[in-house]
Length: 267
Image (cartoon, rainbow, N blue to C red; front, side, top):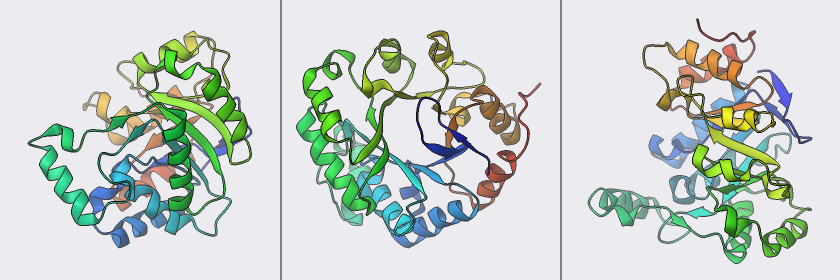
């Protein structure tokens, strides 16, 4: 799979980043780990995760797969957290998700932009991922007024040894206030995009290169084939990486094949 130097960083990533938001839907930790391992075999070298995904299980599974492979790189996040215990059992996760269908608050993410919570979250992520450093730490759907403070900036400096790059993640309406900020927390932008809506144009219109984009399958016309959507996504983000997720082993090979080919927008 082709790789690129992510704009405004010294981080080299594959053109597709393997997203773990839906990894827990595969069931057992063994099945999840096997699928994550298959993504490495397919050529992925960069992985997107968060403590929110699978109530922390995505980071734990990824940690078992990436252990001993420092050449593989990771994005994780702070700012949005799973409800309940930070290390729930599989049964507790299933129960909370089922209850959330009736009482949404039971499974709704908790937003907390305090530095203390971010510091504790980073410690937990490093333990679950079995790593001493994080290549990219994103603030998950931040608030511009809360983030642009001396306390956050001091924390960035404190964590330079364990976090190589900082950034923010969220849809168009979340990231837009940050695009012209001279703030180390906004060095990297991960935002939603689609072939229909071209939402990530707000980034390029602000004079910044696209870095990490996601959301093409959920927000693009179903009239296009999967190949056309993926090829179009790479063409939309020619110098960065597109975050993708799948529970299909066959789709992993499709990603690898497309990321080795010249990219053209679908006609």
